[in-house]
Length: 166
Image (cartoon, rainbow, N blue to C red; front, side, top):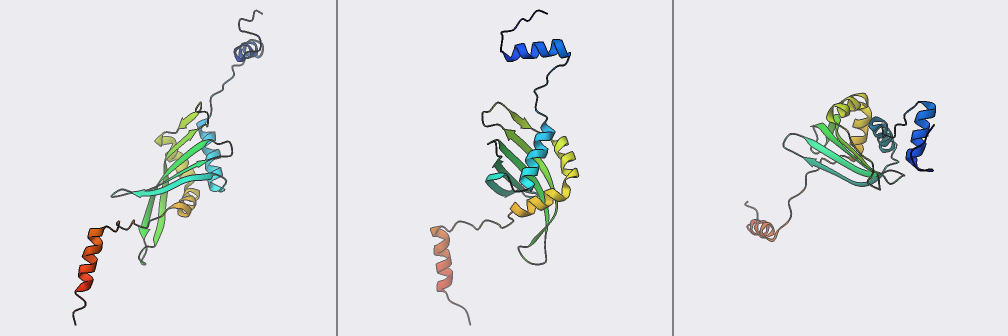
């Protein structure tokens, strides 16, 4: 058997392995396994949370959780949160949550994974209760209060100066 690649190289190892074992080595990363492992770390609170934010559009609320795993890989989850306001003001009941985005980036930048919406929808369906539980730990429905500007403070002071009408 004639070997064409340099001794000790990865290519030579692959060439010899393929010719002897009649098997091709696949080095690609299975994105579903990466998602399962990252989700498990998030669920078990072993993911180092770097940043988390809740943001809303007119119709939807989202939570984005950015973290790193024990190998310093960057992992980002985005969830669409569906909630109903309870009878008490400011109390929300989460009725559904769906993972809308997942990205994985290795620290050296060589490996990067983004999972498409169809796979995420299937994953969300299979992990519905776990996702709702995770989201309830991180979501914040409180609305941001407007920034107190000098103009607003002057208006408040002017209104207060009129006193109460009796």
